Image (tube, rainbow over all chains, first blue to last red; front, top):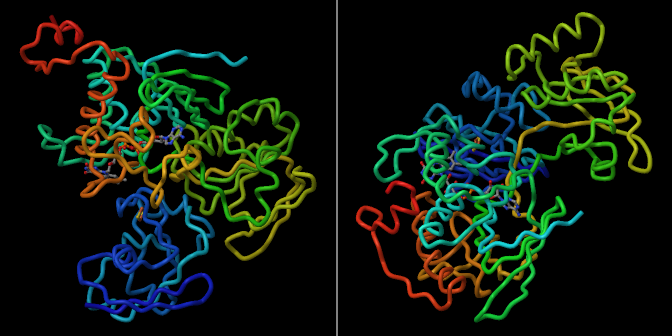
Length: 106
Length: 345
Ligand SMILES: Cc1cc2nc3c(=O)[nH]c(=O)nc-3n(C[C@H](O)[C@H](O)[C@H](O)COP(=O)(O)OP(=O)(O)OC[C@H]3O[C@@H](n4cnc5c(N)ncnc54)[C@H](O)[C@@H]3O)c2cc1C
Ligand code: FES
């Protein structure tokens, strides 16, 4: 179990429980977090689950894989801390993770 | 200019549900035209996960998205469906009565269809280009910002800004290069997903000073009356460059948008079309909804469900298309009649 905080583009934050082994995207959908669409259901095929990982956490979440980088080309306003949330797996190490969601996904 | 096509059934959407419906209709001697905004058949399977394996198609322990679509296309070949690709179905108008329904279907390419029944197999909605979140971009769309090239002449002697790093961006960079005044390609990183020979061709043009490549993202655009004049590119180093451009083409892939279906009087519920579970007919007799687009108690958004729904819808369509003919249940294994239709006898 880990707690994850989603901060939306207007600065509102929501903290929810996440299960180990699931993904940040799945956690968002399960908790009706706005600004995450996840059209492809986590197949790394749509880039509508784009998030910005809080700078304090980028080392723990790691880098995007080559496939994820390719898919990030379809996201808007990509920054060095951009990730696709369906590709971030939750573990105890990510307890307290903070991600921001962009104003526009698709 | 507007041709009217008369047929039994118009199927909106050529995803797996629409494709298999052709088969079930064909066995009952019902002819169909399929319309899809995409340039090819297959819906989500071909567009979102062509190379990924599917494990829950009965009888196929494993098949890729594209593999399934290829097989469906082969399976429906005997029925010679007519495809209209790259067209958006916009209008759906009721002409007949509830006992003898008929409809007029119109597309954005100016085609008109008259048919007895309509099967809405529109999945998660029509695939449309993603619109980048650049302030005020909508004022330029269709005038100087384009997501597809309809006429090359629109780009002659213009400064053209192309945004993206895949095949569409590279192909249009290369195709428009001889026509345009100058091409600037903007991509967020110095790596391209496109075919290696296109990437090489682009790099050669850049090296020869024949076009510009900027690494960064479009921050803002400016112009007037829908005519683009400049764009500001934010480099990854934080610096902003303003460039002159009269045309822009952003390529950020596709997203599913419900689109015109919302205006067809189908009593949408949460962007889905309610249908019954006996024949998958909507609140309008003669209009059916199958696959991901429909909603009913217990619905599962699986390819499997779309196949079942198409088979049952076809039975009711038969009643509308051939009101005087009785339908007898037959198996493809043993019916010589069905085998003749399939061209295997
Ligand atoms: C990554 C991923 C993996 C999946 N894995 C599985 C799996 O393992 N097993 C499974 O059973 N399902 C799976 N699915 C779900 C499956 O792909 C869908 O259930 C299926 O594609 C639905 O088929 P459909 O024909 O109803 O709609 P779609 O495949 O969505 O096709 C609908 C078509 O209609 C077109 N359209 C819509 N409106 C219009 C209009 N107005 N004018 C013109 N064209 C229009 C669209 O462009 C689209 O091509 C998966 C989906 C995804 C995204
Ligand atoms: S959900 Fe589609 S890429 Fe993450």
